[in-house]
Amino acid sequence: MTPSINGDKRWLALIVLCLGVLMIVLDTTIVNVALPSIAADLGFTETSLVWVVNAYMLTFGGCLLLGGRLGDLYGHRKLFLGGITLFTVASLACGMANSQILLIGARAVQGLGGAVVSAASLSLIMNLFTEPGDRAKAMGVYGFVCAGGGMVGVLLGGLLTNLLSWHWIFLVNLPIGIVVYALCVALLPSAPGQAQGERLDVGGAVTVTASLMLAVYAVVNGNEAGWTSAQTLGLLFAALTLLALFLILEGLVQHPLMPLSLFRLRNVAAANVVGVLWAAAMFAWFFISALYLQRVLGYSPLQVGLAFLPASLIMAFFSLGLSARVVMRFGLRRPLAVGLLVAASGLALFARAPVDGNFVIDVLPGMILFGFGAGIAFNSILLAAMSDVDPSDSGLASGIVNTSLMMGGALGLAVLASLAAARSDAMHASESATMALNSGYHLAFLIGAILAATAGVVGGLLLRPGQPGGASTQPNAEIPEVTVTDFASITDNTVATERH
Image (tube, rainbow, N blue to C red):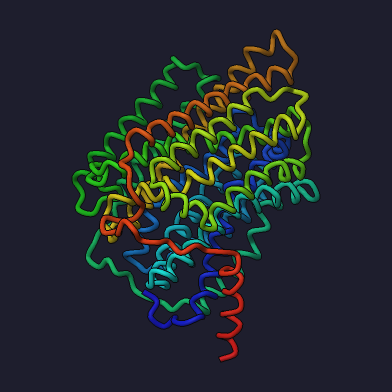
């Protein structure tokens, strides 16, 4: 809890926490537009380049639940400050990296710090804002920062790579991290953990993260090592063994990282399946569309950032309250299904983009459809994952679905990037290098569209109809809409606070 923060000063604390979250969100998209520059500088192959993204995603997703548990045990403020420190130092290492191993290792440490910051910041916001109306507005601002951060990341990544070098997409985190740390020390009082007497499920975090890392490594290197080679099959077998061990541990430990009983709830199970499928398509789209724009159409990093702007703006606009109103009007099932099917159609348009594509004709329509569909579906997935659980378990359910999203994204990106590379290699003998490259991207976009459409169908068939919220949510409850005016008034409130 944060007992000594009250009144309007809470909104200043919210801005500082969201600034820390913004730094984390930036690094999920800022890297995409710099990937060709990183590959050229450090000698990455088409398939090994995936690890620049996946090293971050795997440790982030694998440690999200662990980060939340550490906050419960030792205090969320202490964990937030530790996570910011770790993330900032790792960003410095990324920016100074002169080898593949150093960059990938530093990105993995970044993911660990990001997981801790994300879990702790959400808990701190929930403790700062206990009244339903204020909490809804605060969470709306938090959601806006998460959605807007993707847009800022793409634009900033293109700008820094174009004007300076790819190193600066990481070095830009240093001043932000220092400012966030200093303001949090000044604003947030120290508080002990609340989960006294409970033990940490370190075994669960280690086994599930190691399992997924081995699986992704096997897939990424499958083309080079051979899909039926002893290396690939051995790694996949080890990954499945560790996953089975993780499930056994979660059934035995007193305080599991991922309580398996939650998956008996229909909406929780369906939302996590949908989340894995959707994330596999979404992360692959971000990664491969950036490569298509640069390596096939010849866009500069800044032009790539601007090309992503329509989709990012649409997704950010929906996060300001429109998606919540759509869900309250139509329930969970229809918005989720329609949104994912619309996003799938956007991916399908990318699957026909030619080597001499025109932005307005061949890129913009897919961007708009993808942004529109993702904007509707994303909040629906999160709300569906929490709609069957008690309010006391909503944070845990949210952490589980976020973990599913990150892990689904990591595995999906590895599989689709490997398939794209294999298709390009196979077509290289009969077509030009650019045509072969584009053919591989077409295959990845097509499979991504199939995954997104499958997620929409699964959500439409398996989710129970109804309104969002916990087990005790009233059917006619209203979700206050967060507007830009509400966001702007935060600054006015904090100025008034400082006068006192």
